[in-house]
Image (cartoon, rainbow, N blue to C red):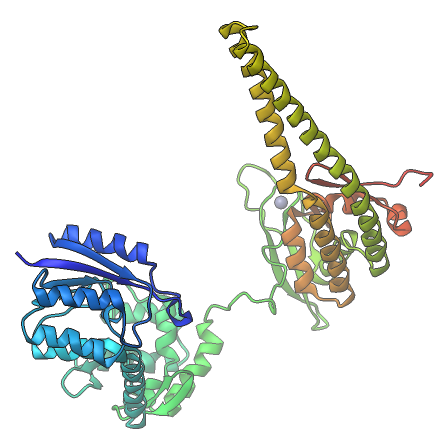
Length: 510
Ligand SMILES: [Zn+2]
């Protein structure tokens, strides 16, 4: 039976930080040995670099192998064993002389053949160079193919990948059919779904035998490959394959796509920027957007309830102009924002609060510590009393348990307090800054920024009677509910309770 040594190594060098820790390597290798029924006689590990020869443990292990204590090594990866030609050479020499009959790596397949040994010597020391080179060679190969006009990808419908010549050739079964459909669509008499149906009827189907997805149909209609070009990484290259249609027909198809094809428009900020932003305040269903063209030719976008509910007969029939909605987004945003001068006032207040709170929290913690040490004293006295036989065991235990539980409660309170500390002040400061940035968003008329901001700080945005309403998370809700006058005076007060943050309105004599 082959005996194995486990060898683990990790150096503290930066480039090896991503390597598994020695413990992790050990765990993995033990598991690997168990799964593969490998008989491990000893484990070796050290934290040394393998770039230079001279690792003691490694040397010791090879010495043991020369003596014949084991014939196999189990390591995480060849680069754990050697990263220099001398150590790598020693391992290969031991393989050559039969002292090592097997090497096992969970991450690397090795067999003691000439090829195996060559691969191993590559893995020892030159692994990085080798993989870099390989990647470069693959990319070079792709570029070479592109220069020759060959597409390095799956052939589009109507063609197939010729495996021997590695070219793309017309597919006898589908070439004429695709050509027919492209010609039909170019006439402008087909919609996108119409041409999808036609393709299905002539037998152009997807993998599962179902009609091609609309996105695939669209892709076929707009793929320059059919007139002899191809795209690679956004660039168009002249192909060496046989074109299916002329460029002229391709251009006609593109025109038909615009007028008839109606490829699905992507919903972007350019179209309806508030789609999905709010719901109907009456029925709670989605708000939809519509484009209206007035007699004068002016275009307007309106938002209204979809009236999709089957249970609620929604009474909301109002249409809200996009501009009006945008204005309301801005108003709402301003309600929960802090102007620069308020920010400065609040931060100043927060700082004085911080000084005060440090005093009071120091006091609070000191009180806790005092009480705890008083309990400790009482416990000691109690024990003394018991040892001096002034107390019965049951009485002693009863009193002791009460004190111990009290002590535990107070200790937890203290560590909790020390851990959280003045965390709320930090939260408050962050919040003030964020609220001030919201003010800047509205100043800059940054609509999408304001929209995202409102989404992040609240929920239940709804349109009711033409008004945009929302619910805000604490402490934003306090800003939103603050009467305009109080906001104008900029005199809100900051309060703390444990780690809660809230905002109170200033009282009259403040
Ligand atoms: Zn509704």
